[in-house]
Amino acid sequence: MDMDDINQIAKHFRDVHFGGNWTTVNLKDTLADVNWQQATTKVCDLNTIAVLVFHTNYYVAAVLKVLEGGVLDASDELSFDGPAINSEAGWQELVTKALRDAELFALEIAQLNEAQLFEDFVAAKYGNYFRNFHGIIEHTHYHLGQITLIKKILNSKE
Image 1: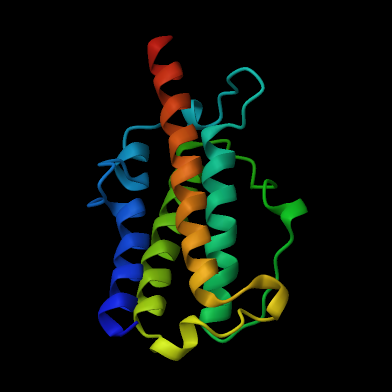
Image 2: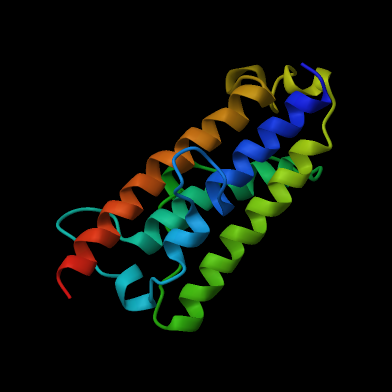
């Protein structure tokens, strides 16, 4: 791996959030026309779009904190406990935070050197940075698919 490979990881992460990936689906465009009522509407027993946005960003924000020199402070049990969304402003705040954190995350990845990619992420039990970055990208794609399907269901009811 070299810096071009590191930049490709950062690009791959950025693409799932802002566009340019081979699926042609990204978080920013998918959420652009979702309002707070849609974002908080429960479909069957699925998580809401707002909960999925919070959940996806939960891990990005936790790893971003580590990349910025902080400690890992996250718990799977809390990863679905997003703020109550009761207005368009609250929804837009959640979306803005997710997209802002994504851009900062991509910038932090691009600043790493090759050796860091294969160092333990915080502790050996979490694997290396490379594994974590790709895991977060896969996780985002997975939940983006759910968000897209929920959005289609909601739009079909209108």
